[in-house]
View 1: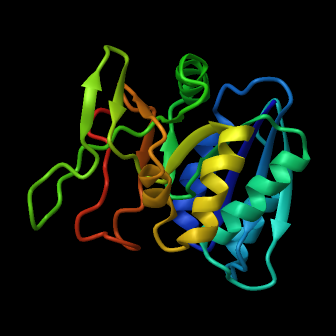
View 2: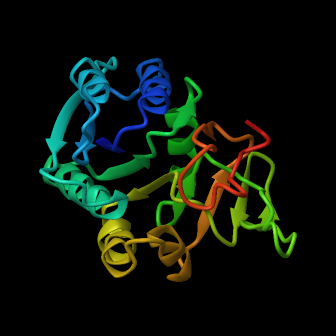
View 3: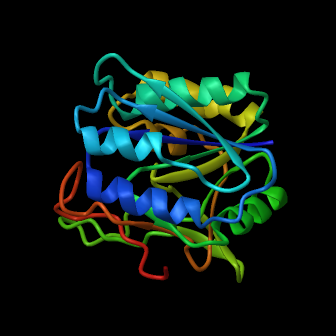
Length: 216
């Protein structure tokens, strides 16, 4: 059973785009979506969450009393998805948009690499200081690539991989948990072309050189 976790803290316009794209997703029957409201004070975002009704999925909402950050909120949401007996987990930032077949494409890639972390976001952005590709490709294999690193915007992994690699990374490094996942040595793959795109490029971490999927 698939569990999708989306954390929300303001950013109404991006959240609206994200939710609209998720509502147009093909989802496996029984999918559970966990929305973690990280103490947002924007009533419009609260209304978006309350009105979020994607097809073929049951929505669960967790509301944090205060803003605890993306990593901690992801941990709370993913732990809850595990409690809901989801054995396949996916996170999605609320400043992303997804293609209608995104879950199907990402899931098929995960079925081929069940002990790995996979993503629908194959960014090839470059470091502004060194001009090096931030998430380089190790090798390409037609409809996917193996990566040296991937961003935390979107990841899919099994319940066991969550317990062994992702959750400890969320606990260890709150600010850069995704880089910590990559540093564990677990295999990382991304779909080609990308089925997830980053929309929130006008604010937030490292937005002087944002990660963008040019093949979306």
